[in-house]
Image (tube, rainbow, N blue to C red):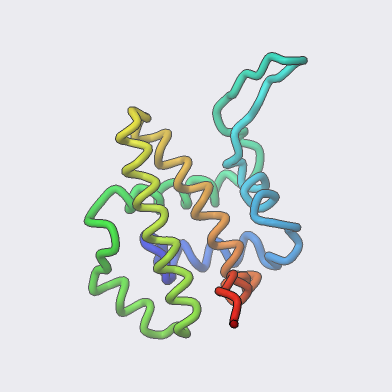
Length: 151
């Protein structure tokens, strides 16, 4: 619940539907399970990009896209009082990971809009990346973040 747009019902639904996050090899496999990865119709040197595959868990895909719509509001780096209250119950490492994710997702959303993407397409792209961040948090990848080498 440290992410923007994810409150109690969404968090509990994700936990109930997924169960064990470690069954996915990486974040890409998790987003594929949700049907949030782009399709491709390629042959030889021709590449044709398609929309998302829609293969997978329809409920979670819809919830994450709805959550991603929250990234189109407010300034980058701004935390609402509600988000601060939800984050107060979490450890400092988890909050730092979620804050980095929230800033990255907001920047990416506004960058996609500035390049002329449809807002709905941008929200689905943010939902895919949000799913990857959720997977990372649930398998404790926030502890394995690259730190500068000590001299």
